Length: 436
Image (cartoon, rainbow, N blue to C red; front, side, top):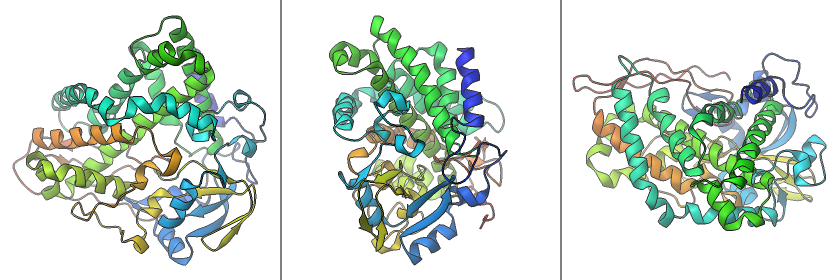
């Protein structure tokens, strides 16, 4: 385990690749802002530059995003067009790195980087376990985990960190138990999951973190082949093990783990920070069950913590948003930008009372939509009201938050809070000044 952890730290820092696109990111201590600006925000809000870009044209060519020339798509209709198209775009990332051949030679794998028919075959292995009927069986356990973590938060002393004590541990324990990951190995998985979304040291480091995670999960799957456990991985092996390779099953487990952890953890932390600036909506969660679903949906839209979707590659020339896309061009859909597109009635205001729009983009769209979307919703719908009931006078202990500014999944490093105070209106978080 120590060997794997050391390898992962090295790979994340230096990246698997010496060069990606026209800019060499392997020799820099920190990726310049000019290569990551679409991921930078002003507090909870996407960059104003992004809004100006969308207003000018919802499909724009960027000469270098993480060292790659891409088409950045920021408009709601255009994002939906790309994500829903089953034949015009590919998710197979290997050609970007000069790789070809069978899936395992690329060492990437997973649903997010797989095209039909392989994507369809693999997704069918997971889908039955993430239906609402199956997920309802998890509700009592999720509720118990939330209460346990609220107890831990209460016992953590003055100004506890809500991220460390609550927002991260809740989804972490849920997904570990769901997959059947052994308790003694969970710290390794935790570090792997957190590292893969940080592009501070370049996009290649993200690929390195993914590869390190897959290596460890393949070891786990191999052990499950011999002695299947009670979790999802063991269940798939018992019921349909002859239909899936260790490589593919490790990719499925990896996607479920990271998708079920970082996104939910960031939503719990950032969502709490937003709610503490809107005390009426926060306290209403504790007393009015009808407010829970619309508040969660608005938080998902407003925050859009998964900032960009998996890259797509045009299979043939096509027109998108009035622009001509050439075969092989890389297309990046900015979900946070599309979530505030005024052309479809969305804006930068947090308003849980706005009509809920069908087809929430926070979980993606089309056949690559997050398979664990309903699990994430269940966690949020349980956790936010429970937090408000237990700590109705919760308030931030700091004026400024340390945001994870160069992360594909946006979040905060920590959220110090004061638990028990006399009734008063929580103060709003102060957003940092714009980088642009």
